[in-house]
Image (tube, rainbow, N blue to C red; front, top):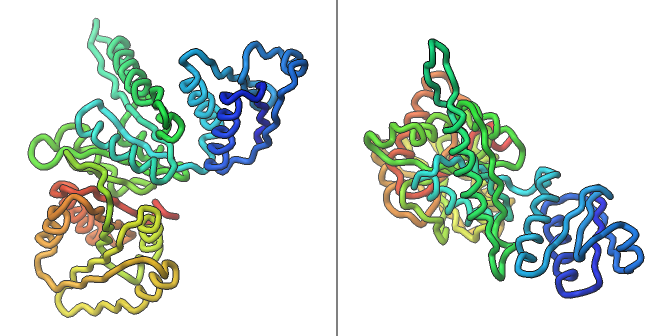
Length: 365
């Protein structure tokens, strides 16, 4: 349990700090005890130089500075307290960035997602070291690495700026800098609880073969958390519909429940789509019972279409409009089925103009 002491004399700044700290700790699900110290003798006895101030676990002291920096000080104090506890059970939204337009577009999407789900953004740059051959020895270019780290620090600082009027409600942004192989690092990060990844894509053609663009495809079938893929120019929609592309209703229950909760949180309608091949039987009665049992007030519909051209149908689905979210799932299959499904998912990612959400068995365990 966190032991929080807040020092002050009952001023508006003190009251606001107390309110916002308690509010954010409750959102994070962290257990805490908050004591108010307003007696001047006690404040002096605890060697507090200025108020308001916050002490955590009787050790870490944060001063909330007035004179134009109050908002930033309070925001930093709250973020430092939460960061030390890994933000509790808040949603951690990992946004990989290479500082390109697609990655910044993904950040904009993540920012809105964080507001809806009261999450924190982890803007992540993974630097793959460059090297030079000097006298037959491989030397890492430290100067280039420092440039990348400074670029991330400056970007996070600008995004975490002093937001007048809503400086606490604006999502917190934490910069994470790593050196290594981007794919391996992101897969490892995806294993952390309460995590999603929001990644930009760069569309079809040669541009998609660039390192960052191909990375979003590389981790599709290995990601341990929900993965959002954001196409170029795609803004966070005023989401009024979430479309779940179902391949096997018998094994989709957990994914359907996950999507149903997103629908309730965002106020979106739910549409389940299945493309039926040949004489395939597709009984939706159990699915209807599941939806109506868990989400009795959810506005939903189910569409089943016969087709021999699954790829054509998927292209139409992900390319018809931008104001919906399309959800696809990857599940445990035999080798041939895995290869086929991976190609379907990659095809959707390459052709989509709307955001995609990729769910796997690992992502909702």
